[in-house]
Length: 192
Image 1 (cartoon, rainbow, N blue to C red):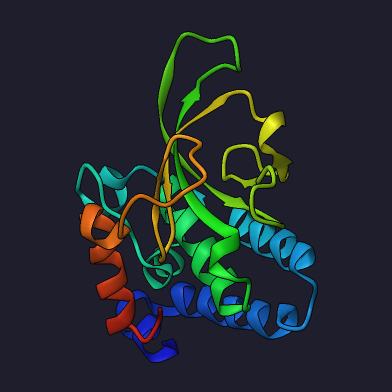
Image 2 (image 1 turned 90 degrees about the vertical axis):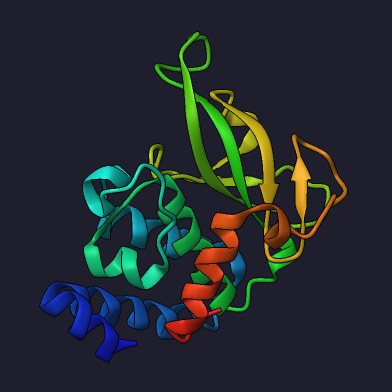
């Protein structure tokens, strides 16, 4: 992966991937709550928020962790995917994590203006209220303390959930073409 980073992104991309690999080594044996804190902080500090049109010249592009680290920038989906994959590599069970597509109220929970956004939810136990890992509000908060977010659907490598439903409804790779595409590209890069 370092060679790919060097070939595609040069020195800065390679340094980001080296720091990411250091994070993976240092966080590997830690308890899940500490892994989550470190991974959230790593990406929120190291990656700059940029729109897909600016980074990729496309309206909506889901980047792999290598692409996000290589460019040093990403949008909400890119932050969420990178955090999910990193925690998965740190042996956090995928059934405890969901990529959550939400409507985010801009300007706070009472605003009438909302936009599409994606965050990572971590469920310490099934059915428990998730912790929200976000790139906009960088401290980790429980979902009940994020009244600015309205879940639309969530997914992981195992399933797809609509709204706040408890049961999975389908194979997400069949329903989410961008998710399927990013998984294929991660596999080509040696991830997933």
